[in-house]
Image (tube, rainbow, N blue to C red; front, top):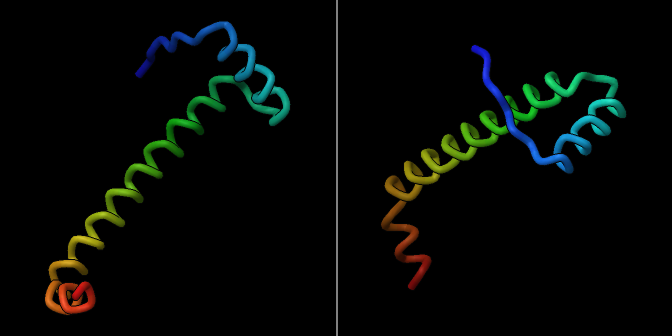
Length: 67
């Protein structure tokens, strides 16, 4: 899928400079950033779901610890 990404001049300059320093294209740098963003969000969701399970499973013990 193709898309247009609008950046400010400052964002584009920073992206161009960073990509050049990394030896990659601006497109690849943006694609990598998107993958990392999605991975972090998915990880956060998994951690939250696991915490919910633990809190439900051990609600009584957690309540007693809070007393």
